[in-house]
Structures are given as structure tokens and as C-alpha cells.
Length: 584
Ligand code: PEP
Ligand code: MG
Image (cartoon, rainbow, N blue to C red; front, top):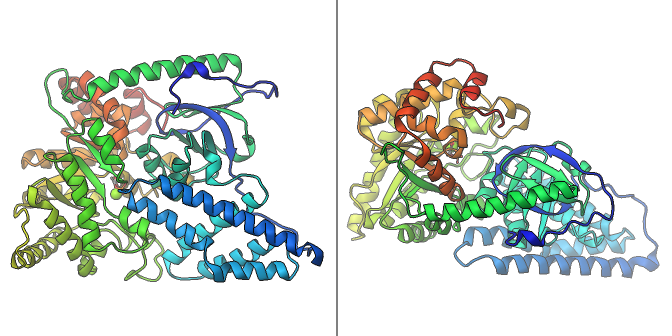
């Protein structure tokens, strides 16, 4: 982050012309820096062979590149905090590839057959990648992506082109797309911002960028060809505007806006201790979504009144395996202890065959509509029980809530309750204390759950509306597919009607209802959601203070009128106009 905006100097000696690109703001903040462009094309190398006398030199180049890259990984690993084990394991698995002697020997052998170091790397990596890609195992196919990234980075280091994570230091990273691993590594390296050609604001990479408070703009078509390495960039994560090689005038405007941002942040800081209450006295509970361990610190600093969502499956994704009861217990305990007496809402693993393979169907055409969330958990009762035991064990201080993902039927709740009872019996026998009244809630993220909410409410303790999936399933729009991203709209009248249906059911049965999807943090949604009867909002911790500011400027009575008017509208465009915003 830049602290002293007065020090900014833009070298305009090259007389590069300014261009302004517009994309989707996916993580707020304002930064400037030089561009580091990750080339998207796969590396095409000539097939011709090197001369025998050059073999030695090529072997040396390979060793140097591997050594440099290992150093880079080890360095990043040393920067990961002790409590961020999930982050560390991702980096460790990358390191294992680079230190796998059998694999490295195969690359060296290729060089000894008179292939260049680049050629040898590509041949051996591609051989492995093709093998993995043919697999029915989703984890192995994901591993292929990982190998592809490492291959490209190794080649970059070999060519001294410095396209490795360390190059992101004090830079703005431009890429076709970024994986969550990339975000973690670039954050460790000190990247200032991210610009991608594709991606969605509800993708886990964007969620992670917001967690780390690194500004990001997505959806800038052809960014990697328009922007060149070392171009000067001003990235505006509030508006989605990217200024490439800014003129002096644009730099001055940036400096002024940056100063305002800093003043604004200072003022926001003062908000941390104040209550989130509307101008006419309606209390709103603002909570944090936790994706990585670091989120809890930010949540505490910004005065979160609890954790509304822990995406517990992050542990599986980062480890590539199911964490043990003990590992889960340790993570949940550290979260629960740090925010006590406020509560932590742990969502049971929301995992599908696109993210995890063990015990999953070999191939699913539509994993988002398939064997995931509660469906997987009720099938793998062994895994579910271990998780419930870990959650119950952490619950003894009575600040834990359990939440179920992807509910579509009442019997999913009934079956879960039976499993919880079994776990309680086991723990009692083992003399392990737990909260006998552990609150059980459900995600409302399918139209089925929203429509059933009135009938389900008497049997559970809270609802949390996952607008990311609720939008996907209501509108039949894949939330990760950039081709249909323009019609993915959480302000669609049908999504708003389902939110209203759910909040009416919750209010009638006197149970809390929150929104934990990305809509909860959207500037145009605060008043509307309050007017729809939502009393709790859970957002990425970095958004808490802005959200509190908006709540404190909102009138509950006006919000109800606004919501009533919006609910009468059939057309998405008219909703936007009424809420006075156009971008998304
Ligand atoms: C949601 O679907 O809105 C949600 C909060 O869960 P996730 O983004 O993890 O699917
Ligand atoms: Mg969801």
C-alpha cells in the first residue's frame, strides 16, 4: 500500500500515450505502479536441437533457474504467518514439484539428448500435464493447471524475464486469469493490485483479493496484449477504471483521489467502535465472512459483530485432502477464541466434484447442480461426523453456530439433526464438553430453500441468504462463466422476491436472517436489503466500515418504502435506475 502519495513520480520520458480501460471493480482501493504482464499464450518452442557442445551450458541454465525459483518459493513460504497453514500448504505443494529429483532427472536427460533447457522443460511438463488431464480425477486435473503454471514460471525465470511471483513486488499484475494460489503468492510477494481479462466478482480469487485488501479490476478484455511490462498503471478498484501510462493531469487527479481515500479511511477507522444503526434507530448486525485465517484479524480491527460465514471447505481446497477432526478443531478454535464472546458461524464443507474427488462421482456434467454441499455430506457421513464433532468440541463456550450449505429439502435438515445427536452422544461418552443447544442454521442459496423457508423456519435457528448461488440457481446463470456474466444479476427482481420471501418467513418465526453473499457488501444494496427486512449482513472484513457508514446514513422507514417500490418492478434496468447505479 502507498502511504505517502506525495512521493509519486511517473516517468513520462518514454512519451507513451495514455489509454483508459474499463472493467468490473472486484476489490476496492486505489493504487499505482508498474505493470507486470503474465503472458497468457502457452509457450511455443522450436523443435530443433542444440549442439552437443552446448549441453553443459543448458544444464547450468536449468539448475540456475530451478534454484532461483525454489528460493522464490521458500521466501514466500517464510512470509506466511504460522497460523495461515492453509496458505502454506499450497506453497509447499508447489515446492515439492521443483524438488522432485525423479522429475528433474527426466528434464536433465532430455537436455542430454540435445534439447534446449526450455524444450526439455516443456516436453517433460507437458507429458505430465497430458497424463493428468486425461484423468477422471478432478483433483489430478486441477494439479495439471498447477503444473502448467509452474512450467511457465520456470521458463520465465530461465529466460530472465522475471515473470514469477517475486516480480509482483510493488507492481500491478496483469493476467488473463488468476487462481487463488496466484493471489496468495502475489500477495506474499507484495503485489499492489490485480487486473484480469476474465473472472467474476463472486469467484474465489476475487473474494481472496478482497480478503487481502488488494485492489482488483476484472473483465478488461485483451489486457495482457494492450498493457506492456513496465507500463505505468493507475488502478481504481472503486470504479473499475485503469489508466495506462497516465498523463501528468491524470497523475494529479490520482494524487488528489488517493489523499481523499486516506482521509476517508481515517474517518472510517473512527467508525469501528460505533454501532451499525440507521438514522431512525434500527440496529443492524454487521459480521465478517472468513475465507483465510488472516481475515479474523481484519474483522476484529473493523469491529465485526461476529462471523457470519466461515467457508470451511477452504481447508480442503488448500490441503487437497479432508482435514482431520483435530485440524478442523484447531482452526475453528482459533477463530472462536479470537472473536469471543461474539459468535462464529461455521458452514459445513460446501464441496463438489469440481473441487474434490475422493468418494465423488467420476464425472459430472454440471458439478454446480450435482453432488455437492449437503448432498455430499449426507453421503459421506464419516466426513460429516468428523466435522460436526470438531464444531461441537469448539462450541463449549457457546459462541459457535453450524450452517448447512445447498439445502433444497426438509429431510436434509432432519438427517443432519440425527447425525448431530449421534455426535453429541459420542462426545458425552468421551466426557468432552459441548454446547447442547448449538444453533443450527441453513444457507438459503437455492430457489427451493427460499420457497420452503416459511415451512422450514420452525425447525432451525437462523437463515443466511447466499446471494451468489441464489442468483446462479434462480437465473440459471453459471456464476463462474464470463460469457454469461452480463446476465448474472443479484438485483434481478426474482432474486429480490426470494430474499423478501425468506426474510418474511424468518421475521414471522422470529429467527435471525442474514445475507452473506456478495450482494451484502454492494453499495447500492444496503438500503434495499434493510428495507426487505434483513437485520444481519456478513461481508468480506475489508468492506465492514464502508458498509457501517452506509447503514448509519440510511433511514429504515425510507428503506421500507424503497423496497416496496422495487418489489413492484419487473425489469432489471428499472431496478438499477431506481437504485441510481448502472455498473456491475
Ligand atoms: C453464496 O452462495 O452466496 C455464498 C455466500 O457462498 P459461496 O460464495 O461460498 O458459494
Ligand atoms: Mg454458495
